[in-house]
Length: 307
Image (cartoon, rainbow, N blue to C red; front, top):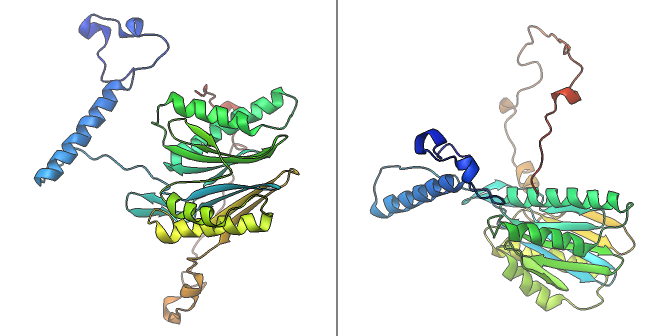
């Protein structure tokens, strides 16, 4: 229970015994306090008051352009690599194409922690399901069902907008999954803050029975449209190709339109600013081996994971 909840000695009521079964309300008081802090911050900002009633840290968001399309022999997924924290770029090389199964990958947009943890949990469940079914190939619709059930359970509080893609015995599939749990099976789709710019490229260039090369180039063009027309998207283009023959290719940094290395190499700095080896003398060097042989199972605490 939350520390804001009075115990049985204070109110004469045993909250643990009277709490309804099936749901957890332990964060109700915490959420109400956060809501009041947000209201106080907005009201003080509107009135120009210098008082600071509280600070609510902003979550790191991917602010993203993610896409996926079906071509005749598989699917192509693409994503940019910029992660933002408010108006600042928090990560220039964020990986947004997540592993779910050997034949299924998922692009994530929204809060970075939510997309990573959601895909990590579903990937674990897919692995357990494959082991239980004798290492049978995972179905894309199974991953879609697990994802939509988890997101719907949290009623949009998990900020994860996903583009799910893969190939199974039924062929190539692309699914669009919203944070509230609604899904759509489409031949091509885009999501994220740069989705409109990417969709303009798809609607112009997509056609049925595209080759792998044509599909890959179209995905690159769509992501670049988001990078150059959306402030929340940027840096490089990642591309993942999943084929019906069971092979997969992940190309990190397939396109690097904002590579700063040539610019930095063009700068000539004075040798006086370069500290050569031996500038600082080493007075003593000593190595002491660890007494224990690393981490053992006795050091690991196993807790039950809520899914």
